[in-house]
Length: 242
Image 1 (spheres, one colour):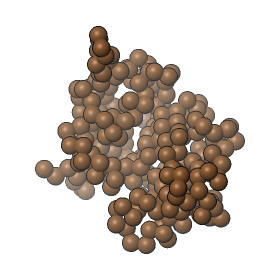
Image 2 (cartoon, one colour; image 1 turned 135 degrees about the vertical axis):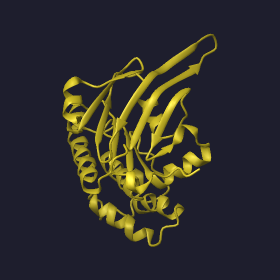
Image 3 (tube, helix red, strand yellow; image 1 turned 90 degrees about the vertical axis):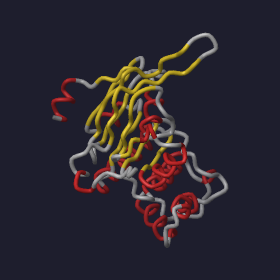
């Protein structure tokens, strides 16, 4: 079965379409419902913030949208592929070719330099001249003079910049960010926010993020609120989206 979006329909089909998504986990004596009946659409090139209190289900939702996990019920379509019906290997292949990630904890390999961390996904994808592409991105995020530094030689903000460069290295159609400024001070977080929004606009990459940062959320085109596993969108935001 062809999982790719028809190019003729790409401009009109949403990047993400979620239908009646429910996720439960089994406990020793009970079943916990983390997400309940979530449905949403996110268009190509949009920037969307998912906000909510700790334990509301937002990080679980992000993982399901990215194909890191499969829902108990419902359907997730990413760029025309119904990822909720794919095998684990197929989901991994789709993520490698079309999805970028930025995590709160940076997730850099400590033994590799900044340049090597950004080069790694390009090398795994078999890209020609990965070093040139990695250098270009590190210069774009202001780390052209820090190519040989390992993560422990970089500040938190610099590590997050490396992570952002790595996330954009393979030109993903969609980027998921889980609390991208959560471990940063206000000034550094603002700089990282600027970088994410600039790259979203410049490359047309769809941006979906979970954040507690109200200022960062306000910079996104839409905000979705999640409470006790139920997703809502403020009326004003819906009217603007329409």
